[in-house]
Length: 178
Image 1 (cartoon, rainbow, N blue to C red):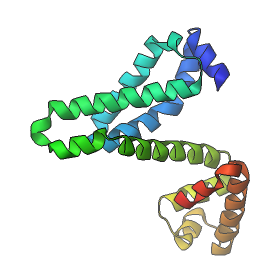
Image 2: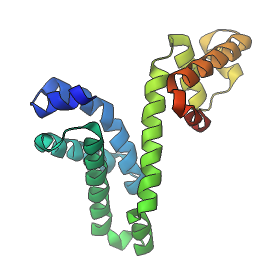
Image 3: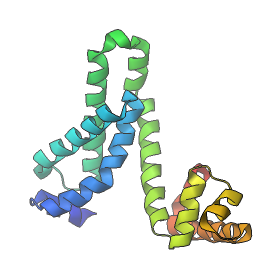
Image 4: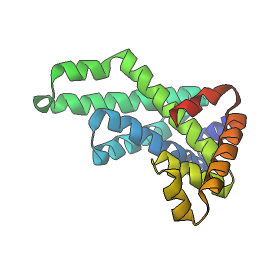
């Protein structure tokens, strides 16, 4: 990731595109927790990433980039909420501004990103089964949809979770969230 940040810093647009595609959905989800509308959340996420591109020379590592993106996104969301404060309760805005809300939300986003990335590394069948499970689909419905037996679903799921534990290593506790 450090190399990607350095390539972006040097103006490599392809590297920025790769970074954008990776972080845009995460920032959209983060902004949505504040704004509760997809369109505005997407706009805010895009603007934050554009600001990063414009200030790319200021960053040496992924941690500082992430901090910048989350703070810019949060502040933009709060500004939008304050502008429409006639529709919002001031207590709700204060709660959204709190550090505990920010830390909780950042943990959710980081967890989502890490688990999503690891799930994408699973073999195809296991990945599809886990993705369907994450959507709340039960084993019999997964078996029917994939035209396999329910036992095959169970076995694939067990193997997938074993592989996820292995890939997540010290972060295996994140499996509790999926």
